[in-house]
Amino acid sequence: MTNDDRQLGVDLGELGDDLESADYPLSEDELMERYGDEEIEMEGNTTTLEELIGPLNQEEYQDYGDVETAIMNMVGDEAIGRKNYSDRTPPASGEQRQDEGAPDQDNQEGQESF
Image (cartoon, rainbow, N blue to C red; front, side, top):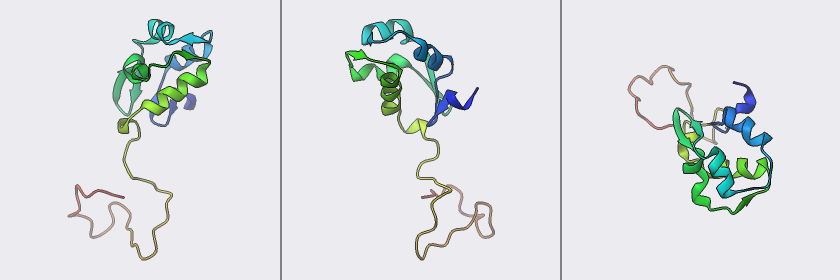
């Protein structure tokens, strides 16, 4: 799997390649007929393309970018991994953070990190 196969927690796998090389524009019916049963993986969960973007009822997809945008707009929380987590956000003024596994954190199991 290359880095291009997974974006924002979504793994399109071979479907991404197939969608990129498809002849556009494609109607929603054509897209679903050809690729609707193809599976998309999101952080260990899978769904089909039709289950994911079918509810949009978009008439036509002009290019791969349209399909990719529809997929990314429709993925739920299951694709983002750990919620409210960023290792790049500096502590707020007055906030004291400890690294996970640091001393005095033994009794904090199940505590949500923000």
